[in-house]
Amino acid sequence: MICPVMPRLLTLLSAAVLVAGCASSPGVDTEQRLAALLPADAILLGEQHDAPDHQRVQREVVQALAARGQLAALVLEMAEQGHDTRSLPADASETQVRSALQWNDDAWPWRAYGPAVMTAVRAGVPVLGANLPRAQMRERMADPQLDSLLPGPALLAQQQAIRLGHCGMLPEGQITPMTRVQIARDVAMANTLRAAARPGQTALLLAGRGHVDRQLGIPRHLPATLRLQAVVIGVAAQPVLPDPEPAFDAAWSALPGPEIDHCAQFQAPRLKP
Image (cartoon, rainbow, N blue to C red; front, side, top):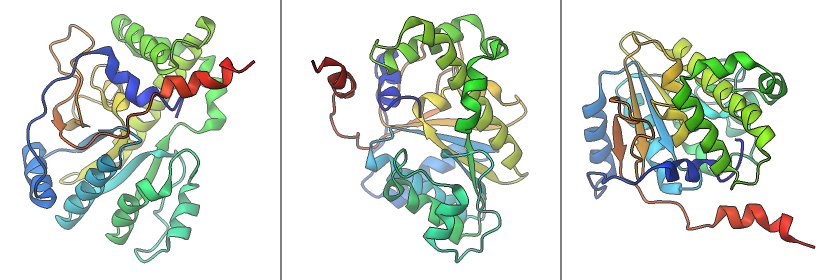
């Protein structure tokens, strides 16, 4: 997680579009939503990190896919690559699961994501950390090869997202290194998701909205042969690039997170005398 305001401000790059559907009956609604997406090798579910209703939707999707016997793996931005639950039994305790995933509760509150994770574990489905390990970030910041992984307009859009995500307070000299980290994180998650894919099943990725954007995020680093569906929860954003391919394949309605001025919080410590 680069910055606490990043997920919300990524959507400010564009205007909102209407999202169809209501959730009067969450279970039925989830089944209907999935029916419109399947079959798929992978579903990328993009959330607003501080919106509890988004995590409720995630849990229901995990539950629905697991009940069908269709969930190949639950892949998480919220845990680092190299940590997973594959060695644990279905009746493993939450303590065992958190230890296996090396869960960072300060960055990702377990109370928000634990229900989805434990639903997968109880179903005997592996949960895989997919995010770039923090130990690799400095090396990725200095890797110019990452600049070539996005076409020019997408690279510029990703750099602008970094500026906005840090409330315009990031020194310009740090924009390129931080953009490289963002791209490296998308590559890491794409690699984990691709390895988790199984014929006839669906791997499910949970990540922030910006990461599942077809124009800027993880889909850019997945093979065209992989049948994927990029879904944004909540208010969707219009494509930031003049590209015929939409940013998302579907937008699912859900309650937003609390109205918080993250930039005011981000700036406050710097305004003190």
